[in-house]
Image (cartoon, rainbow, N blue to C red):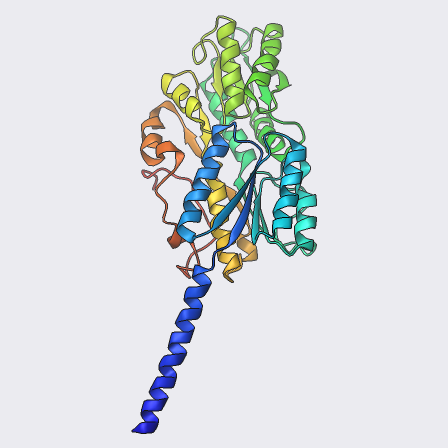
Length: 357
């Protein structure tokens, strides 16, 4: 009887030690660095808000670097995060900062997840950068294609049988701008009767886009449709049209990407034909992957490159969008998506309306 009792106590002690170990693993407070190119844009504020929501659930400390649209400030911010010894980094590799960030964090043994901007020629979990554990971002080419198709289909041909369009591109050299434009070019190549009057650089900024499009429109007043590379660009284009005495959505159709609040309002008002986005959630999705990785749940190689299909928005879906994404953030079960709490969770993330089947 005495030996059985001792054996029972030993087994109970082992169970308790195991339970304590699991609890400690889950309760360890990690510090994760997060970089954003700017907080002047509503998009990036929503990006940060969603990350902070997840960080509160997981007990993570977030150290934020706002580059304020200054490349040097972004590079310096990453250096500071490395010097601080953060446990992980979620980085937006604007201004070709990706390679240096991967090199420096590899030397410091810091895992990195890239969001929004893909690094050409470097895949997640490559032999050269095993610390690059995942990418989470939009399928920009797919989005650019959807924007163009919506525009072309809604336009009426002129007396010569042409649909004349203008393009306002994003920041030159960024994969975001390049891939969105690829989508436009693909749609253009497969759609007879559409003529591109010209393309200008709006740098993803409202004022720059307004000035650039004013010049393009003055030289090509026959433009009846505009493909704008992002939300701020579309806002600038619509301002330029109003200054020219035109009514956006009536005299000239405009499409955009990002689902910024003012653009959602513009879609509802009939000024903006089509918008697509929701990818500000990518940062929160990356946080789940990073949290799991730091808790010993690596990202499977075949799930390490997460390309998001985005939410399309037309006047008919504005009401549903506002219902499903109040202030841009959906109801989200963070622990259900984490392998720490749900071993069956997969590194797959969706942007969808509640009415989608």
